[in-house]
Structures are given as C-alpha cells and as structure tokens.
Image (cartoon, rainbow, N blue to C red):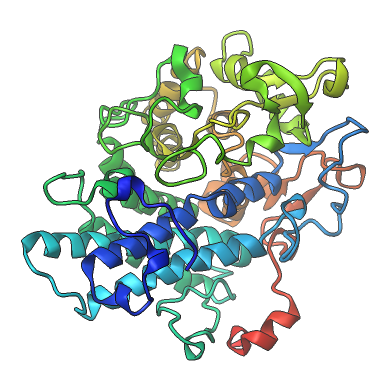
Length: 515
C-alpha cells in the first residue's frame, strides 16, 4: 500500500502493516480507511476529477498566448472525448480510475473485515467505531463509483440502463484471483451507489465524539456527506422527488434558508476557497462547506504539498503578487463569459472576487482573457460539497414540481449572497434558464458543469421538454468554443465521444470486462 500520513499520530501508518493484519485489528482497519481518504483527497484523484470534468465542459478554452503550450491540440468536432491513458492535458481518465480503485480496494478491505466480524471488539466504543468505519467504507466506495460512472458509464436514462458502466468492485483484491471483474450496467451501478450511500447514512455518526472516535476522524466524513451524496446521486438521475428528500434532510425544510450550512456572507465569498484554519471542515460548524479539502492531503497542508490545480487556472505565485510564473494554460470559454456578462458584473462578488482578466503585459498577453481565482493559490481550499449547490438543485426541483415561488426563493438566496437583485418571474422556460445560468456562475471550475449539461439534455424526451431551454430541448449539450473546428458545435447527450472508451489491450489483463 502507498503511504498516507497519519494525522497527529493518532493511528498507525499503514506502510508498516501487512495486508492481513488490517483485517483483524480495529485500529489497523482505521489505518486502511485513512489510506482511502488520503487517496480520495489527493491531487491524483479528486483534483483530477474536478480538473477533467472542467476540461470536459464548455467552461474553458485554450489560452491565446502563443508562448504557452495549449491544452486542446487534439480536440476537434470528431474526437471530443476523454482519453484513457495520457496526461491530464488530454483529458486523463485512466489515472482517475486507477486512483479510484485504490480507494475502492481499501474500502472493500474494511467492509470484508467488519461484515465478516473479523476484528476483536473489546468494548462498546470498539463496536461504535466498527460501525463508523463500515459507514466510511460504504461512503467512499459509492463516491468513487459515482465519479467513475461520469467517465465510463452513460447518463442514467431509460435508454441507457443496460449499457456497460464501471466495474463497481464489491470484493477486496487480496490476490490475483480477485482481479477479474465484469463491468456492471448503468442501472446496476446506480442501484449500488444508492445502496452504499443508504448504508453509510445509517452507520456514520453526525458528530465527532472525542471520547469515542480517534483524533483523525474529526477531519473525515460525517453522516451529512452521505446525505449530500444521496441528493446528488438522485439529482443526476433526474429522480427529483427522491433528491428533494435528502436535500431537505441536509438543509432543512425551509425554502430559501439553511441554518445548518448558512451561505458565506457576500463580503467574505472568496474565503470559501482559501485556507482559514488548519483543519478540514466539520459538520454543523456553521459553514457553507459541507466537506472540503486542504492542501493535497486529507489531513493537513504543508509548505511543500499543495493542490496542483492552481497551476492550471492562474498564477504560480499570485498570493505574493509575483507575476513571473503566469500559466494561463486554460481560460474561460466565451459561454461562461457571456453568462457573467448577462448578469451584473458591477455587483456580482463572484465576478469581482473570483475572476481575473489578463492585461497586455509580459506573459499575461494578450489582454482580455478571463480565468478563475478559485484554484489560483498554493493554499487554495478545494471544496467538495457546499450548500449553494444544493439550494440551486432545490430551485430546479421546485420548478419541475410547479412550485414556482419556492423555486424563485431558492434561486434568490444564492443571487442575494452574490450581490444580485432578486429574480423576477418571466415564464417557466426563462426561470429554468436563470437557474442554469446561476449554477454555471456559482459553481464554475468546481467540476459539475459537464454532468449538468448531459443531465439536462437527457430531459429532452421527458415532460420537462416543454419548458427546457435550448440546446437541451433538442437533446444536445453546448461545447463552447474549444477550437476552430468545434466553434459553436453541439453533441447529443449520449454521444460516445463524451465518454472514455476502454482500450482493447485492457481486455487482455481483465477478460471479465467484456462480460
């Protein structure tokens, strides 16, 4: 197993343990799940999930600076897809799937151990911690498969349910005989995601209890993360009634408000994406962030470890006003720029605090390119789940349920925090477009636009088609202006170019993939 630093030495490092020992000792099982967190929160996994999903959307395009290597040389109207084995510049999916398998396998080791009652549980606290570890393992396994399906499985839809998706391994790989595993269908993967998240919701504690839990657990996932992911999973399926149940559990039933995860104040919006303390975010800490990561570790940042994502979007030393290492390799696509411009850039704090526009000086040239400052600093905080996303999800759900006043209330809580005027109703299609635009602006560069586009376009043959905005109404997704060959082009939501195709040579090593 690879090493994962043990926070405050509260549990032993898995590098000194044999794989067999991890099955029989409750403390060593905690080491195993600790390693799963380390992999999930790392540059190699979650950083690349966000990055590749952002690259796969209409949020960004190439820099126009001829001295900087562009990122989309291979993109055209005919090859718009994730590559399987390549570097991140070319839509790396293979690395994400590989690191995700590390998380899954560690989780499966924990599940095997506890479900088979292998550890010696000496007291009631050991029993509680075994339940908590099992919940963490179910949660991490489900989260990895949720993201894996965005690469190798189609959008959940009546027409795709029997198509191949991810492997969704449910047994630990402890020997060569455990490696072969057939791909599951889209329907199976989503069923397993929901089952695992439901199990996690039942098993995970709501709070960290220092008299029960090891110190490291205060920096890991609580029950609300499972609830949030249940809402996301159902929402991605367009199962709106089920999604609403879990959004209400997360935020409370009052529309346009959340006492549990209140939105960051307008004046402090940029602090959502900056390190403000030495710990990850905690449940019920009166923060908008439900879960976020510091540095490139699940546990603590250091001066030498940082999220690599900031290298992509802005300056290497922006926080020190050092403009010598500009790396505007990706900049905002005109689609995202237009979304901001049709709003209120004079008052929108997301524009004022989060957008940088280049000037005709040095490596910044040419002037007029937009980029985001969300990941611009070595100390940037990478947000995984935050309340604003779920308010906008609830706004769309209420729209589908014809509860237009509640939909507008949910939309306006996000607009108000951004410094914008309240939305005035002008029709159902216009309200839907306003929600989509607000989600585009609010969640830009956070890795959700690609899955949003595909999900929305998949509604084209549903009852929502009557008020679905273009181009989603025709079942198409917007691609933006990636390159001259793809300018203003569109693709159908289920086009194979939107997904990672597993190469033939992979079947040599895992013949079960074809089953």
